[in-house]
Length: 291
Ligand code: NAP
Image 1 (cartoon, protein in one colour):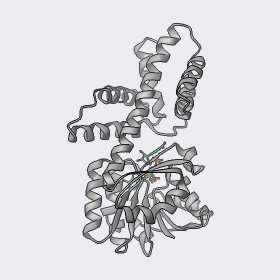
Image 2 (cartoon, rainbow, N blue to C red; image 1 turned 90 degrees about the vertical axis):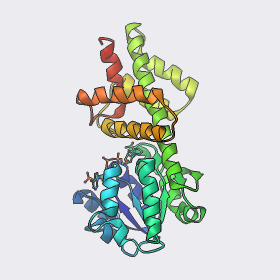
Image 3 (cartoon, protein in one colour; image 1 turned 135 degrees about the vertical axis):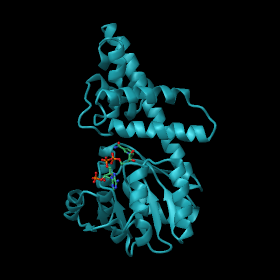
Image 4 (spheres, protein in one colour; image 1 turned 120 degrees about the vertical axis):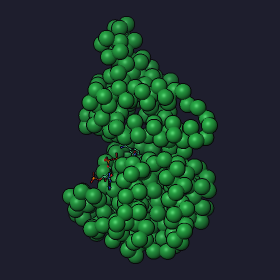
């Protein structure tokens, strides 16, 4: 398949490489050109704008930081919407708001283009190893056309519904669950350090109970205070919890725990932790405990 891939950050680079490995023809674009040039060695063609990357492709994938970046890349000058052919599909894999997913679906439809939301779970190492969990939503026929690409980047694809924004709602609630775990680890470690219990012991106990690599990996990182280099930057984690609360507000479904977590992340930002991994939110509980 001929694919455009736009956004070659921590996640996008590995995803684009796996599409190349699966035999697809990939044209890449990244705002900072050097990250795109790095993919040329793997066989990618490099475009000078999002619009140019989209010329003649069947599918264009975006993996960008946030709503603003996606809007600029899709609707901006030499943007995707102008470059993409009628009947081509935009797959949005960034973690964006449900509101923007709705706007993208209707905007692409108005000019005869397809739109599928396919946010992913998994950190950059999972992206590099094609082990992401893909949550896709959109019209059934479009999902079927995109399936070979999901198989190339992930280990499992779950279909959330026929409206693209439904996948974004799942992704936001999923990140809220992970953030709640990080906060719970932070609070527990603060108490256990005062009880002179070895943090790694607690990780072993929790891993025995929950049997999840998410608990094991994040627990270990927090126990060892390993927050650099960031797999997922705390400033992006705060973006996601804000989007979670925005979606909850629009759905008239309160999320009091998410509000607490947002405030903890704001404290971490204020203390200069924006570029550290979001698991460093645990430092706030330690600090509040005088540690
Ligand atoms: P990242 O390393 O910070 O990469 C962000 C990408 O967006 C870069 O390619 C960056 O270009 C581009 N970008 C940012 N602002 C832009 C703008 N205004 N115009 C054009 N391009 C712009 O982020 P990431 O960790 O790969 O995350 C990407 C998305 O995946 C985010 O929505 C994130 O929430 C989500 N996600 C992340 C993880 C994770 O563990 N890291 C897991 C699942 C989902 P430059 O290179 O020029 O800066």
